[in-house]
Each structure stands twice: as structure tokens, then as C-alpha cells.
Image 1 (cartoon, rainbow, N blue to C red):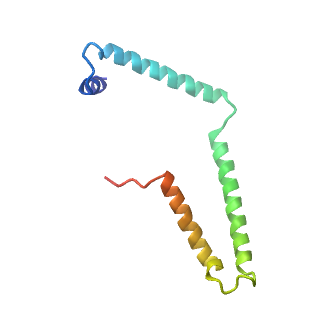
Image 2 (image 1 turned 30 degrees about the vertical axis):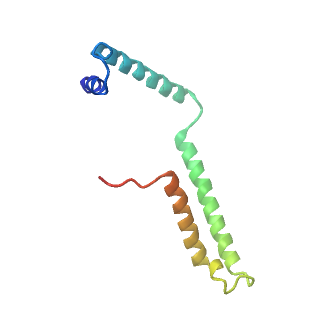
Image 3 (image 1 turned 45 degrees about the horizontal axis):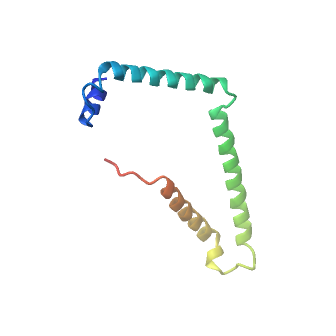
Amino acid sequence: MNAIVEKRRAEGAKEKDVSFSSVASMLLELGLRVYEAQMERKDSGFNQTEFNKILLENVMKTQFTVSKLLAIGSLSPHVTGDERFEFRSMVSNIREDAKDVISHFFPEQEEE
């Protein structure tokens, strides 16, 4: 609590506006909100682990299906000799494109 009070004062809060009592009250209120949110989550029918399992299963099925379709398509006589449609080339391009999109939403953080 002392660190919170000191930080607030360093940020320019007046001594009368920041006290141990006000910080304790804020932390208690925050703790109660977190507790209530956890209780609501337990009461809901949503199961995060089950959701993650189903999501992963469907992503994997989609990935395997698309891989097989790419392999079949790359054997077509209509694309024979076109490097853009060679299986290895397509896989590399897909990985690079996916990496670009992911890095846009989740930029790599520099190690400190």
C-alpha cells in the first residue's frame, strides 16, 4: 500500500487526496469486484478449458484438411511447372503471411 501511496504522490496527487485509508478502501473494493466476477464465472455454464479444447480441435481439423487440399491441388496438371503452386512454395508463403499477420497483432517484445 505504501508503494501505491508514494506512486500517486509522485504523480502529483495532494497528500490530502491520497492516504492509506483511501488506498485500503480502493483495494478492498477491487478485491470484492474480482471475487464477485470469479463467482459469476463459476456460476455460468462456460468452461474455458472445454472451449479451448474444442477450438484447438477444430483449428487442427481445418489445418489438416487444408494441407491435404493443397497437396492435391499442387498435383494438378494445370499448375505443373508453376513454382507458385509447388507444395513447398505454398507452405512457405502461407507461413510467412501468417507470421506477418500475427506480428501485427502480437508484436515481438524485445528481451530486457
